[in-house]
Length: 295
Length: 90
Image (cartoon, rainbow over all chains, first blue to last red; front, side, top):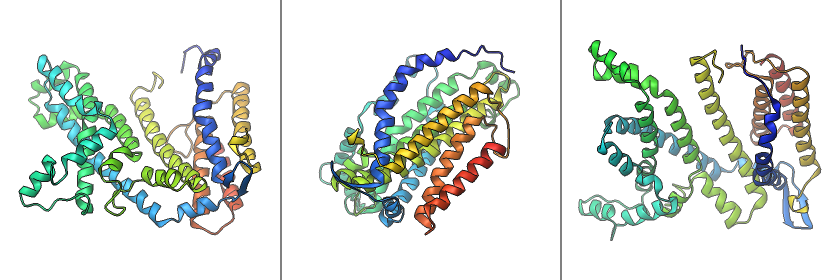
């Protein structure tokens, strides 16, 4: 079945990386687990609390609401960014200087740091000096992200779409470029419609990059912090407070190390579960496609 | 090591995980795993099934702690049982 030569000594080459990961990830994670079952007041004053923090976190209605908002946010931006990214990739020029120019223009938002994106949109949406805020007000639309939760949501989603759709578009663009010209020639001979070409040639060939795009965008949006923090600060009220901001408030603002450790572990487990499901799906699809080549 | 604020239960937890990984390595050396398909929708190796078992054990524990008043030992027993079923027939 598999005639590759197995040589386990290759694992020795991974050893330096393993040591690095142990120091940067595994040992801190163990410490978080230790904190999550105790009330640590000082180096010599700590009390074992068992599962108390986990119980209170799982039954905290504010955190449950933040979790629901987080899921809603991730699903919304996926539902917008994936079709939009495919659409942009389809209409992008395919060759010549136009292709390079469009590629650079489209990538620009990806180069802007998160905090700066938040600041840009914060100013952009201000009613007094921001172009969008001022423009909407002049049009007679009552738009205010610090008072109206709907406006705040719409703006955060718009901001995320502006910032990250280019990533989906670029992935799709590279996927489209890898389709051999012969497929299109065959389609032209069959007089296939544009829709048929998209449905039966382009979309199937895009599946792999789309799974990667969905995985990246989901994980990224599930951990979003800086942009909404700068734009709305989680408000109005708590209407745009997502999970990582709740965690930061708890851990840094209130110094509740025990509960925030428990919260971090639950957060980590959810992300681990989702990533694993996506990873398995990708690997599974590849295996189905070439069953003899190995994954 | 004091900064890691170890407790006995967490030390036991991580030692068991380490022991499992070491055990799996030994088992793999003695009789290499064969990828197969059980009741799970995907074909898995022994290590895959252990990972799935441990991850679902975490969620079983969270479920029992957060949404029932049952003892955590029941969650542990359930997880152990599920892990065995998964390793054998998964």
